[in-house]
Length: 370
Image (cartoon, rainbow, N blue to C red; front, side, top):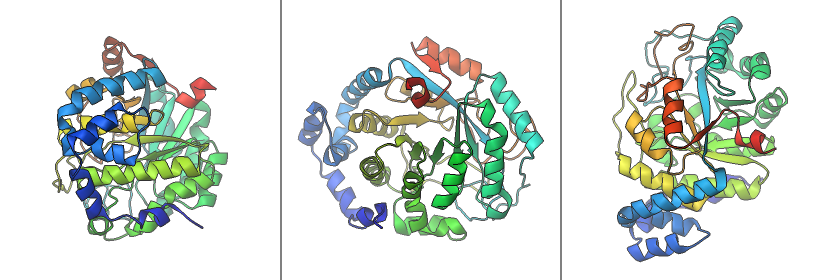
Protein backbone atom coordinates (compact mmCIF):
# COMPACT_ATOMS: atom_id res chain seq x y z
CA UNK A 1 0.00 0.00 0.00
CA UNK A 2 1.46 3.34 -1.07
CA UNK A 3 1.49 6.12 1.50
CA UNK A 4 3.03 9.58 1.67
CA UNK A 5 6.30 7.90 2.71
CA UNK A 6 6.66 6.52 -0.84
CA UNK A 7 6.64 10.07 -2.23
CA UNK A 8 8.59 11.56 0.70
CA UNK A 9 11.50 9.16 0.21
CA UNK A 10 12.03 10.48 -3.33
CA UNK A 11 13.04 13.90 -1.99
CA UNK A 12 16.32 15.04 -0.46
CA UNK A 13 16.12 17.69 2.28
CA UNK A 14 19.44 19.38 1.42
CA UNK A 15 18.62 19.53 -2.27
CA UNK A 16 15.23 21.11 -1.53
CA UNK A 17 16.96 23.89 0.44
CA UNK A 18 19.40 24.42 -2.44
CA UNK A 19 16.45 24.68 -4.85
CA UNK A 20 14.61 27.17 -2.63
CA UNK A 21 17.65 29.38 -2.11
CA UNK A 22 18.38 29.35 -5.85
CA UNK A 23 15.01 30.90 -6.72
CA UNK A 24 15.27 34.36 -8.30
CA UNK A 25 13.10 37.47 -8.21
CA UNK A 26 11.97 36.53 -11.71
CA UNK A 27 10.71 33.18 -10.33
CA UNK A 28 8.84 35.08 -7.60
CA UNK A 29 7.23 37.50 -10.08
CA UNK A 30 6.18 34.57 -12.27
CA UNK A 31 4.60 32.85 -9.27
CA UNK A 32 2.72 36.01 -8.28
CA UNK A 33 1.28 36.42 -11.76
CA UNK A 34 -0.08 32.89 -12.02
CA UNK A 35 -3.66 32.06 -11.06
CA UNK A 36 -2.81 28.45 -10.13
CA UNK A 37 0.49 27.82 -8.36
CA UNK A 38 2.49 24.61 -8.08
CA UNK A 39 5.22 23.42 -5.71
CA UNK A 40 7.92 25.20 -7.72
CA UNK A 41 5.97 28.45 -7.29
CA UNK A 42 5.67 27.69 -3.57
CA UNK A 43 9.46 27.29 -3.36
CA UNK A 44 9.83 30.73 -4.94
CA UNK A 45 7.29 32.32 -2.59
CA UNK A 46 9.09 31.05 0.54
CA UNK A 47 12.56 31.81 -0.82
CA UNK A 48 14.83 34.68 0.29
CA UNK A 49 14.23 36.18 -3.17
CA UNK A 50 10.57 36.80 -2.23
CA UNK A 51 11.38 39.12 0.69
CA UNK A 52 10.95 42.34 -1.36
CA UNK A 53 7.52 41.08 -2.48
CA UNK A 54 5.97 40.35 0.92
CA UNK A 55 3.69 43.38 0.76
CA UNK A 56 2.39 42.31 -2.65
CA UNK A 57 1.99 38.74 -1.38
CA UNK A 58 0.03 40.03 1.63
CA UNK A 59 -2.38 42.03 -0.55
CA UNK A 60 -2.97 39.03 -2.83
CA UNK A 61 -3.41 36.72 0.15
CA UNK A 62 -5.97 39.06 1.68
CA UNK A 63 -7.94 39.28 -1.58
CA UNK A 64 -7.95 35.49 -2.09
CA UNK A 65 -9.02 34.84 1.50
CA UNK A 66 -11.90 37.32 1.26
CA UNK A 67 -13.04 35.80 -2.02
CA UNK A 68 -13.00 32.27 -0.59
CA UNK A 69 -14.00 32.77 3.07
CA UNK A 70 -15.61 36.22 3.10
CA UNK A 71 -14.95 38.61 5.98
CA UNK A 72 -15.22 35.80 8.52
CA UNK A 73 -12.89 34.11 10.97
CA UNK A 74 -13.56 31.00 13.02
CA UNK A 75 -12.98 30.82 16.78
CA UNK A 76 -11.92 27.64 18.58
CA UNK A 77 -10.61 26.73 22.03
CA UNK A 78 -8.09 24.07 23.02
CA UNK A 79 -8.91 22.01 26.12
CA UNK A 80 -6.08 20.02 27.68
CA UNK A 81 -7.33 16.76 29.17
CA UNK A 82 -4.01 15.38 30.43
CA UNK A 83 -0.30 16.20 30.70
CA UNK A 84 0.76 12.58 31.23
CA UNK A 85 3.22 11.45 28.56
CA UNK A 86 5.44 8.45 27.82
CA UNK A 87 7.60 10.27 25.27
CA UNK A 88 10.81 12.19 25.65
CA UNK A 89 10.59 15.32 23.48
CA UNK A 90 13.27 17.96 23.90
CA UNK A 91 10.95 20.90 23.26
CA UNK A 92 7.84 19.99 25.29
CA UNK A 93 6.89 20.83 28.88
CA UNK A 94 5.02 17.49 29.13
CA UNK A 95 8.13 15.42 28.25
CA UNK A 96 8.47 12.31 30.44
CA UNK A 97 11.83 13.55 31.76
CA UNK A 98 10.35 16.77 33.21
CA UNK A 99 9.62 16.43 36.92
CA UNK A 100 6.19 18.04 36.97
CA UNK A 101 2.89 17.11 38.68
CA UNK A 102 0.90 14.95 36.26
CA UNK A 103 -2.83 15.25 35.93
CA UNK A 104 -5.62 13.69 33.87
CA UNK A 105 -9.10 15.19 34.09
CA UNK A 106 -12.05 13.17 35.38
CA UNK A 107 -15.48 13.28 33.70
CA UNK A 108 -16.68 15.85 36.22
CA UNK A 109 -13.61 18.03 35.67
CA UNK A 110 -14.02 17.82 31.88
CA UNK A 111 -17.61 19.01 32.18
CA UNK A 112 -16.54 21.86 34.45
CA UNK A 113 -14.02 23.02 31.84
CA UNK A 114 -16.66 22.63 29.11
CA UNK A 115 -19.13 24.79 31.06
CA UNK A 116 -16.54 27.58 31.17
CA UNK A 117 -15.87 27.38 27.40
CA UNK A 118 -19.57 27.23 26.54
CA UNK A 119 -20.16 30.34 28.66
CA UNK A 120 -17.67 32.11 26.35
CA UNK A 121 -19.56 31.06 23.23
CA UNK A 122 -17.30 28.32 21.87
CA UNK A 123 -18.86 25.68 19.64
CA UNK A 124 -15.60 24.25 18.26
CA UNK A 125 -13.29 22.51 20.74
CA UNK A 126 -9.82 21.01 20.38
CA UNK A 127 -9.09 18.21 22.87
CA UNK A 128 -5.38 17.83 23.66
CA UNK A 129 -3.46 15.20 25.64
CA UNK A 130 0.09 14.03 26.12
CA UNK A 131 0.96 10.66 24.60
CA UNK A 132 0.30 8.04 27.30
CA UNK A 133 -1.54 5.03 25.91
CA UNK A 134 -2.44 3.41 29.23
CA UNK A 135 -3.77 6.57 30.86
CA UNK A 136 -5.16 8.56 27.94
CA UNK A 137 -5.50 5.92 25.25
CA UNK A 138 -8.37 5.38 22.84
CA UNK A 139 -10.85 4.41 25.58
CA UNK A 140 -10.25 7.66 27.49
CA UNK A 141 -10.41 9.80 24.33
CA UNK A 142 -13.55 8.01 23.13
CA UNK A 143 -15.24 8.52 26.49
CA UNK A 144 -14.31 12.22 26.49
CA UNK A 145 -15.79 12.73 23.01
CA UNK A 146 -19.04 10.95 23.93
CA UNK A 147 -19.22 12.97 27.14
CA UNK A 148 -19.19 16.35 25.39
CA UNK A 149 -20.40 15.70 21.83
CA UNK A 150 -23.88 17.07 22.49
CA UNK A 151 -22.36 20.38 23.58
CA UNK A 152 -20.23 21.24 20.52
CA UNK A 153 -20.79 21.45 16.77
CA UNK A 154 -17.20 20.29 16.16
CA UNK A 155 -14.78 18.19 18.17
CA UNK A 156 -11.14 18.06 17.08
CA UNK A 157 -8.34 16.12 18.78
CA UNK A 158 -4.57 16.55 19.02
CA UNK A 159 -3.34 13.35 20.67
CA UNK A 160 -0.90 10.52 19.93
CA UNK A 161 -1.06 8.98 16.43
CA UNK A 162 -3.49 6.05 16.35
CA UNK A 163 -4.27 3.09 14.13
CA UNK A 164 -6.85 3.35 11.34
CA UNK A 165 -9.44 1.25 13.22
CA UNK A 166 -9.07 3.47 16.28
CA UNK A 167 -9.75 6.59 14.21
CA UNK A 168 -12.82 4.88 12.74
CA UNK A 169 -14.09 4.20 16.27
CA UNK A 170 -13.57 7.81 17.34
CA UNK A 171 -15.27 9.10 14.18
CA UNK A 172 -18.32 6.93 14.94
CA UNK A 173 -18.41 8.48 18.42
CA UNK A 174 -18.50 12.05 17.12
CA UNK A 175 -14.92 13.02 16.20
CA UNK A 176 -14.77 15.60 13.40
CA UNK A 177 -11.11 16.53 12.86
CA UNK A 178 -7.58 15.51 13.88
CA UNK A 179 -4.46 17.66 14.10
CA UNK A 180 -1.18 15.78 13.76
CA UNK A 181 2.02 17.75 13.35
CA UNK A 182 5.14 16.04 12.04
CA UNK A 183 7.17 18.50 14.21
CA UNK A 184 9.99 18.32 11.62
CA UNK A 185 10.23 16.46 8.31
CA UNK A 186 14.03 16.23 8.73
CA UNK A 187 14.45 12.55 9.63
CA UNK A 188 17.82 12.85 11.45
CA UNK A 189 16.84 15.99 13.34
CA UNK A 190 13.54 14.32 14.32
CA UNK A 191 15.48 11.49 15.99
CA UNK A 192 17.46 13.97 18.11
CA UNK A 193 14.28 15.52 19.50
CA UNK A 194 12.34 12.26 20.01
CA UNK A 195 14.84 9.79 21.50
CA UNK A 196 12.33 7.66 23.42
CA UNK A 197 8.66 6.64 23.31
CA UNK A 198 6.26 5.78 20.49
CA UNK A 199 6.78 9.22 19.02
CA UNK A 200 10.36 8.25 18.16
CA UNK A 201 8.94 6.26 15.21
CA UNK A 202 9.27 8.83 12.41
CA UNK A 203 7.54 6.74 9.73
CA UNK A 204 4.50 5.86 11.87
CA UNK A 205 3.93 9.53 12.53
CA UNK A 206 4.56 10.46 8.88
CA UNK A 207 1.87 8.02 7.73
CA UNK A 208 -0.73 9.12 10.31
CA UNK A 209 -2.61 11.42 7.88
CA UNK A 210 -2.92 8.44 5.49
CA UNK A 211 -4.59 6.43 8.25
CA UNK A 212 -6.86 9.40 8.97
CA UNK A 213 -7.80 9.69 5.29
CA UNK A 214 -8.60 6.00 5.00
CA UNK A 215 -10.66 6.19 8.22
CA UNK A 216 -12.83 8.93 6.70
CA UNK A 217 -11.96 11.68 9.19
CA UNK A 218 -13.65 14.87 7.95
CA UNK A 219 -10.69 17.22 8.40
CA UNK A 220 -6.94 16.75 8.86
CA UNK A 221 -4.61 19.40 10.27
CA UNK A 222 -0.93 19.48 9.29
CA UNK A 223 2.05 21.52 10.41
CA UNK A 224 5.66 21.63 11.58
CA UNK A 225 7.13 23.10 14.75
CA UNK A 226 9.23 25.96 13.46
CA UNK A 227 12.57 26.25 15.20
CA UNK A 228 13.59 22.59 15.17
CA UNK A 229 14.97 22.85 11.63
CA UNK A 230 15.12 25.29 8.70
CA UNK A 231 11.56 26.63 8.37
CA UNK A 232 11.76 26.71 4.59
CA UNK A 233 12.55 23.00 4.37
CA UNK A 234 9.79 22.01 6.77
CA UNK A 235 7.32 24.29 4.97
CA UNK A 236 8.06 22.72 1.59
CA UNK A 237 7.48 19.21 2.95
CA UNK A 238 4.26 20.36 4.64
CA UNK A 239 3.06 21.69 1.27
CA UNK A 240 4.12 18.46 -0.44
CA UNK A 241 2.23 16.46 2.20
CA UNK A 242 -0.86 18.65 1.79
CA UNK A 243 -0.89 18.29 -1.99
CA UNK A 244 -0.47 14.50 -1.78
CA UNK A 245 -3.32 14.16 0.72
CA UNK A 246 -5.67 16.37 -1.30
CA UNK A 247 -5.14 14.20 -4.37
CA UNK A 248 -5.43 10.92 -2.44
CA UNK A 249 -8.26 11.74 0.02
CA UNK A 250 -10.10 14.38 -1.95
CA UNK A 251 -13.29 14.30 0.16
CA UNK A 252 -11.36 15.42 3.24
CA UNK A 253 -10.82 19.05 4.29
CA UNK A 254 -7.41 20.30 5.39
CA UNK A 255 -5.89 22.93 7.66
CA UNK A 256 -2.36 24.18 8.29
CA UNK A 257 -1.04 25.54 11.60
CA UNK A 258 2.12 27.58 12.17
CA UNK A 259 3.48 26.89 15.67
CA UNK A 260 6.83 28.48 16.53
CA UNK A 261 8.94 27.07 19.36
CA UNK A 262 7.87 28.73 22.61
CA UNK A 263 9.49 28.73 26.08
CA UNK A 264 8.52 25.87 28.41
CA UNK A 265 9.70 23.93 31.44
CA UNK A 266 13.01 22.34 30.45
CA UNK A 267 13.56 24.84 27.62
CA UNK A 268 14.99 24.40 24.12
CA UNK A 269 16.42 27.24 22.09
CA UNK A 270 15.40 27.24 18.39
CA UNK A 271 18.04 25.74 16.09
CA UNK A 272 16.88 28.08 13.33
CA UNK A 273 15.10 31.30 14.26
CA UNK A 274 11.94 32.23 12.36
CA UNK A 275 11.25 35.98 12.39
CA UNK A 276 7.82 37.60 12.30
CA UNK A 277 8.52 38.65 8.71
CA UNK A 278 9.36 35.05 7.81
CA UNK A 279 6.08 33.86 9.30
CA UNK A 280 4.05 36.49 7.42
CA UNK A 281 5.80 35.41 4.20
CA UNK A 282 4.99 31.75 4.87
CA UNK A 283 1.31 32.32 5.72
CA UNK A 284 0.83 34.35 2.55
CA UNK A 285 2.74 31.74 0.51
CA UNK A 286 0.39 28.99 1.72
CA UNK A 287 -2.67 31.07 0.85
CA UNK A 288 -1.33 31.75 -2.63
CA UNK A 289 -0.47 28.05 -3.03
CA UNK A 290 -3.90 26.83 -1.92
CA UNK A 291 -7.04 29.00 -1.88
CA UNK A 292 -9.14 26.44 0.01
CA UNK A 293 -6.89 25.27 2.83
CA UNK A 294 -7.76 26.63 6.28
CA UNK A 295 -4.92 28.49 8.01
CA UNK A 296 -4.91 28.57 11.81
CA UNK A 297 -3.17 30.84 14.32
CA UNK A 298 -2.83 29.95 18.01
CA UNK A 299 -2.17 32.09 21.08
CA UNK A 300 1.53 31.16 20.90
CA UNK A 301 1.92 34.41 18.96
CA UNK A 302 1.84 37.92 20.43
CA UNK A 303 -1.20 40.23 20.50
CA UNK A 304 0.44 42.58 18.00
CA UNK A 305 1.40 39.84 15.54
CA UNK A 306 -2.04 38.23 15.65
CA UNK A 307 -3.73 41.57 15.05
CA UNK A 308 -1.64 42.11 11.93
CA UNK A 309 -2.02 38.60 10.53
CA UNK A 310 -5.79 38.07 10.84
CA UNK A 311 -6.48 39.93 7.60
CA UNK A 312 -3.71 38.25 5.60
CA UNK A 313 -4.94 34.70 5.13
CA UNK A 314 -5.76 33.26 8.56
CA UNK A 315 -9.21 31.62 8.78
CA UNK A 316 -9.28 30.34 12.38
CA UNK A 317 -7.92 31.62 15.65
CA UNK A 318 -7.93 30.58 19.30
CA UNK A 319 -8.30 32.86 22.30
CA UNK A 320 -7.87 32.74 26.08
CA UNK A 321 -6.11 29.38 25.66
CA UNK A 322 -4.81 27.38 28.60
CA UNK A 323 -2.21 24.68 27.89
CA UNK A 324 -2.54 22.84 31.18
CA UNK A 325 -5.17 20.24 32.21
CA UNK A 326 -8.01 22.04 34.00
CA UNK A 327 -6.52 25.44 33.23
CA UNK A 328 -9.85 27.19 32.64
CA UNK A 329 -11.82 26.32 35.73
CA UNK A 330 -10.48 23.25 37.58
CA UNK A 331 -6.82 24.02 38.32
CA UNK A 332 -5.65 27.30 36.80
CA UNK A 333 -2.23 27.09 38.51
CA UNK A 334 -0.96 23.77 37.07
CA UNK A 335 2.06 23.75 34.77
CA UNK A 336 1.52 24.73 31.13
CA UNK A 337 2.83 22.82 28.12
CA UNK A 338 4.28 26.06 26.74
CA UNK A 339 3.94 29.75 27.50
CA UNK A 340 1.05 31.67 25.97
CA UNK A 341 1.90 34.98 24.36
CA UNK A 342 -1.56 36.45 23.67
CA UNK A 343 -3.37 36.29 27.03
CA UNK A 344 -6.40 38.41 26.18
CA UNK A 345 -9.87 37.18 27.06
CA UNK A 346 -12.20 35.75 24.43
CA UNK A 347 -14.28 38.93 24.60
CA UNK A 348 -11.22 41.10 23.97
CA UNK A 349 -10.13 39.03 20.97
CA UNK A 350 -13.67 39.09 19.51
CA UNK A 351 -13.73 42.88 19.91
CA UNK A 352 -10.36 43.12 18.12
CA UNK A 353 -11.54 40.91 15.25
CA UNK A 354 -14.71 42.97 14.81
CA UNK A 355 -12.64 46.17 14.76
CA UNK A 356 -10.77 44.64 11.80
CA UNK A 357 -14.05 44.22 9.93
CA UNK A 358 -14.24 40.47 10.57
CA UNK A 359 -17.34 38.50 11.49
CA UNK A 360 -16.68 35.85 14.14
CA UNK A 361 -17.87 32.31 13.33
CA UNK A 362 -18.19 29.81 16.19
CA UNK A 363 -18.70 26.61 14.19
CA UNK A 364 -16.57 24.90 11.57
CA UNK A 365 -16.71 26.12 7.97
CA UNK A 366 -18.00 22.79 6.69
CA UNK A 367 -20.99 22.94 8.98
CA UNK A 368 -21.75 26.51 8.00
CA UNK A 369 -21.78 25.66 4.31
CA UNK A 370 -23.87 22.50 4.44
